Image 1 (cartoon, each protein chain N blue to C red):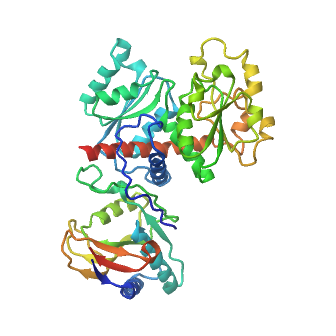
Image 2 (cartoon, each protein chain N blue to C red):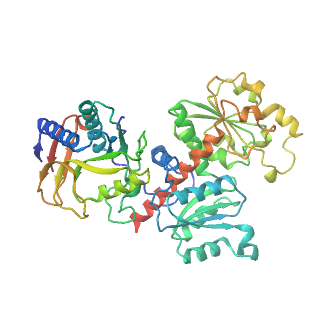
Length: 319
Length: 175
């Protein structure tokens, strides 16, 4: 058992996790290393540890979510925190309360960490300036979904050992995907090369400013990549007609068994979920030997435990 | 910096600890060694191979990270940032005699954390504490079952255990 030494000087100081873009490679690596220590909490007989005992986490979700919301609930529970579940539909937001008022009211009850998902980009940052609690971004507009980006690089690192030098394709609806952005920052900072793949109509504006290359043909990149991350078409956010038909999109950009035959033998197939089977990915591929989709979900729990632990530690040291 | 134990003395203390554990543990009971990160891990590994040899059966060893159980996690006075690392125990601890190993027993707080961490993993038959250096300054009602070198170095001073595997040589120094 080798003793893994981390840099002695490094100190985690962020009481908010707002995005991956602002993190250094060292900070990302520190989160991933910390998450490794949390994996075993979920495998033993008592699936709970005490570091957040007596702390209150509020899940402030203004958009629908099952995976991320439940993952944060479970992460907070396993750290012994208490959790308040807030959803837009059952709250005073439907009576016209503003985000800030909602947060201030919750804070008056003595919460310590706010996990927020909001359709407006920048909402977590706005909140972090207005409340004393720690703020963790669980998805804001088209901007970032940092814990998804972190769990994706955690999953890749766990299997491949490193991201250094890997070629990673992110395929599909890039324009509406905060996952693509958080992935891009996390992957490139750790030394991977990222290729955005999709029809031009689903590429974000000013893409040349981002540290990625672009391809409009999945067939051109499928043979070259070590990891392929398939995104869902976000029909709820689509405006206009970005592609002629679902069938045509699926024909050009779906990950099929036929396409997989040309991929590297050790390619990893990822998907942040929810999956639209038969559209962006064939069932046989989603459930196939290269798929790490359920690994991602499992690792997400450890990564979110690490994030909650670290922001709380930073807050404790600032008190 | 003053060297209080050299490599020969460290070796003799480990031999003594192993002998004492062997003589006091009924042969029919299953025994395992678990070290507290990070120096305790190395000492546990050494003790387990010694015990395996002397008892003529496999004595497994594991590593315990106690960070999540520390009692200073939410206190602002903590000077070092707690670093969560992995717990690696590849066997069932239920009904075993667990020899918990640490390099230095001082306040007793690490031992308390380690016991809480252990019982979240199962229900051992007994937990016994073995330490290389036993210094004064207990803040909790905890004592070692197998104590190596006893020292009355004044509270506040740092007793540093260096081991070949992590530091290049075996020695114990006071800084």
